[in-house]
Length: 336
Image 1: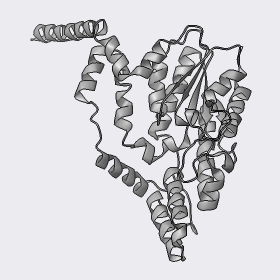
Image 2: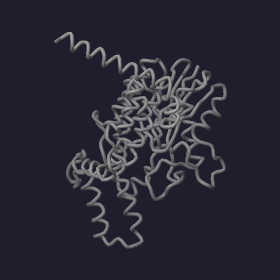
Image 3: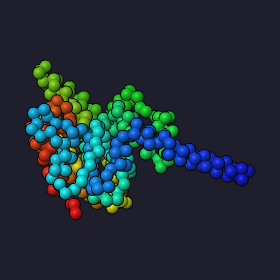
């Protein structure tokens, strides 16, 4: 009986390995280009690239009136002309994707990786975003060391995609249940209470139709930033993996904390929201400095006038704002 089970197990593992190698040397390269082009970009970086920038739309967004249309990473590259720099970026990505990009890199010859850290990515609305399934598909082919298994997981949509309705339910559930750290006289215990209560308060105080856009924006700020980052936050676990990669491969990693419109957060909502934003920033700096990660703190580095979007909570900056961040990055870089 034991021999029969052992034989079947050996046969199974032999079959898995055979599928892995057949797929690896036949269809895998074309599938990788089709489903995971940014993983391909990571895997095929030139050997003389020593500095790498991981980013999202904050890197590429610009205002039509900008005299400089350069991205943040292009500005950084211009300030370190002796170094060959590469940029990997796309819209709405976060540390859960960055960590997979890192795993695809050959660390040999790499001096540092600059990783964008967006405070909003730790919140429920981003963690349970409707586009999360598509983002995960883009790195599914690197999920395990076995290419054939990864392709099977991609085909079977495992883990299962979340429907838009499921995403919305998860977001609202987090907003309803995660407690805020404030005590009396602050009257809201959760993000949902704060969002609903603030809206009703402004309306009941005689806010006019002209104030509707301001009220909506204020509530967007509450939903985007009214949370406390803790050790069990899935995004924290992602950044922990990035820190572990840095230590294992002896490659310096910088976490670039993006600037937020603190002035809008304060004027639209109040000091309590600004307190949460600063507290979350401080938590991340303390945690990752202890893991030998260089923290670049841009949270309050940019004035309100240098934010492009005035009716949404985005990290999109004018050329002057992007230049401020680029200079802060270069000031922190410790290159040979």
